[in-house]
Image 1 (tube, helix red, strand yellow):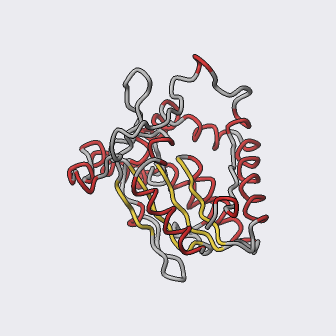
Image 2: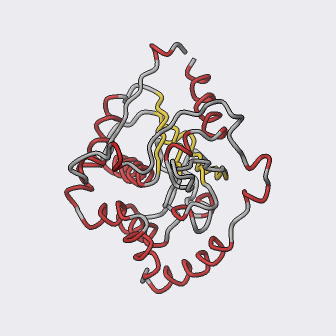
Length: 249
């Protein structure tokens, strides 16, 4: 497919929550192009990085206790102090509705197309909400493949909220594929892998969990395993994108 024929829509929500974008010295995590120093790392060459971490295993046990009790004090701390946009998503209904509407409109405009949704962090939550809501109210949707990057959909508090709003946790009906890319060191991805939490849809589409290595570094050398740039640069995401474009012709 020629670049000129590729339809791309950037569904942005940060301006709904923040009055000004980060710029200059205020942006501690700028985008910097790679200078060809070698291939980006992958768990394919480092099997240990694909295994659940100690934090993962501890959280899984605590998560099951939180769900059984219906109380999520640990998740409250994670959301408020590490993933505060998620906190705002549930605390501010106007913000939540506006963010969903942007994706809903973009999908409606592509209703006759095959669509790849690449959703980082809270974007995966918004995508899940929009797809399940459209399914419930009969809104036509395009055939969608979903790639979630650094998704928090395994957190106990989010699972409880999603179940309250949409019912059973499962792959949305519109999805022809769902690949979940997660860096095991990314706090947003702690907990059980999504394939064990979200049941297949009626067409038999299952979540495919794929560990990756998010190699993003700030200018001072500090890592951020949750950064969108790092996920988008992984070889695993490149394979998803290439496969989608090949299928689209």
